[in-house]
Length: 504
Ligand code: AHR
Image: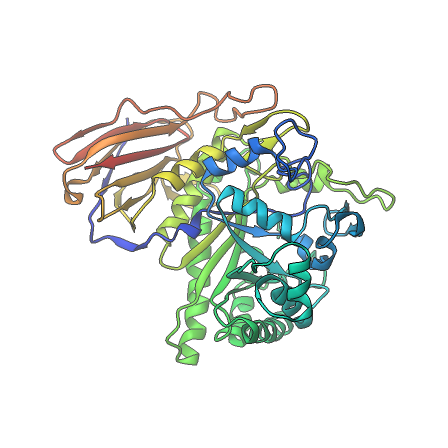
């Protein structure tokens, strides 16, 4: 069996862990909101129509921040449609997803749901079909206690206390030709800067996110970040990244290595931002909001799910309902390792999305809610990671991939909390067919014992949890783990994700 060696040291600190890395994303798309988190007729629905079984799962997932209401949807959204008496709210055509938006759920309802699940609300403004005025109208409505019209409208609609939303995205994927109202980097940079300045006139302490590239493979990637930040560097706090991965051409080995693309993406965006920082002689370091990331079988969306018929505008159609396998979950766990390894720059991240739509939680109307395979690495990382992020020194064999060349077969990150002595190590074995023995030298973290181990693996890497078999896949304790003389020895099965929690 091949072997790998990891060494941990309290001096290997990347950054204090920002819990906003465990954020997620809810878009008015398919059955994420309607027939997902909101289903008034469901047996578990509360007085506001929210499914209690979904609330319980979201809490267990440990989501800290939720980006809302899009996504592509936000670029045609009129926020005013979603406030006030429900019976007066208009139905609108959502051109992003070719659906009918009923506006039954809007700002007040979603803010209430976010509070129920214990998450911070992060809003996106529409810079596709709208601009500065509508952004500051929404901000006044959302955050400002005043006798002015929008603040008073909020009060009349039942929210005396402002929602006090801190993080705001200035549009969504504005570089993408699929985006309603997409723009050149120059045009978007000017608009984002003006919108940010206007928003800060109302509320100076906002945390604002400028749109970066929709993915690393956009033809404008790099130049987009540079131009947008040349316009917005002093106005915003974050530049965004989005990335989705899926297995192509049955090449599992390459798919399992796709976090190498995320690693490079983050480092390249940081380099583009630092280039602008140096030219501007700025003291500020731009943070990254990785506000959409996941496994998403986009080929399925293009070939099967996509609605194009002009006479078809369904309410909450089944869109992007990918069923995730063990391999997908290992990739999700590895993408979380990548985000943590870059915790000095990535200060906010959103798993896209949360319920039914490329989601860790699935529901059936009037029926069950269950955990996809991807639920487990997210929930366990969010629960066990604490304190500071440590980047281990790795001595790991490599394997050959068609897409990424030679790639380490094991990837890992750790956290350590100097306050209570707790530590955690998160690892993946990317090999498609070989187990590996890993030793982790934790002696320099102080006297520790293994408190918990969890390994997600299966004889069938394509096994998934489905409506018919909701508990087919779950992590189990890794009984091979031993800690002797400050060194953990553990066996990682092929295609697996593992968490080891340590305590004093
Ligand atoms: O998450 C699904 C879609 O992916 C979002 O609406 C969009 O921002 C991205 O392209």
